[in-house]
Image 1 (cartoon, rainbow, N blue to C red):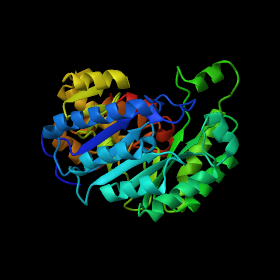
Image 2: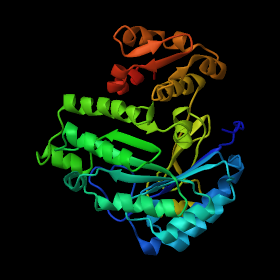
Image 3: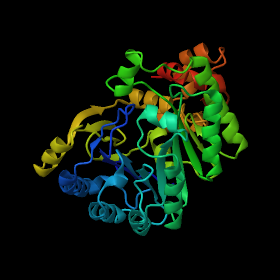
Image 4: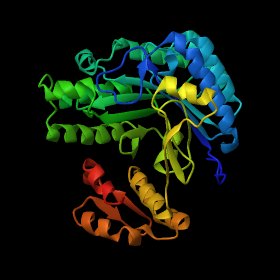
Length: 380
């Protein structure tokens, strides 16, 4: 990790909203690929990047292309975008791109590797065909393995798989089988998320109409506990509530978020933080393009956070990490011992076995991770 430059971000997030289809559970801003509109979006991203260059401390420490599915971009447009960002990175930069199975070809994999991308996050979600149907994923199970093989042949060895537990109809043994398949593929990182039924999504409508049923909460909690146990036994240690990695394999870009460090953001709906102000871009591709073309700010939400709010948000985000809130680092950054600032929350949750506190850190216990949102909310 390079030293932070005051007022300048060392991390960059680029949001590419396009997908081949929109999954029923997804509430990220995304839309079906429109090949006629791709060129205008890439032009806007390049213009926005040029405008923000002075806010970036190059070479960047991390870059993350998310979405959507960035690998559905036609190769010529993807190449233009990669070329511009490549000017801001060096061999030490962690550069991640998200991909869905069957959206990676030998051609675009070679392009990624040639431009400096060195980490790929693949949205596997499940190795069970019936679970993929519930999630409205369009890839076949075997295409996960095929995609990893294509990436490795191109020299892209740093690989993550996203998995979802708590899928309607899923059993504890079925979830364990998913984990075992993922571990067997030899990836260095796994992201394991409990399914959420977000309002406004087709999956939420199916839930409210009775077409699907939630997994029993006790079974879902056991799925999470087994995730920690099984992956730890396989050498993938938990370093964040939902993330597991082999030694040295933690995602540095996401660590920047959880440590509340500045991250610049490009693209429709992308959210960024400059160290004082949080912002979010227009959640509409056409409107984002029009704003950038007209030389207007693409931000639709901006909030300048006072020091106390920044301290509390940092604590909340730190608690997602297994390292927790590092008391010395927090005090150096905000001028107050977090054990004093958050004494009321600590007094409420530590006796209940949800927090552990010592001279070095404050962190969630295993039990605390099961009710993390409630505990972290008291720190904000």
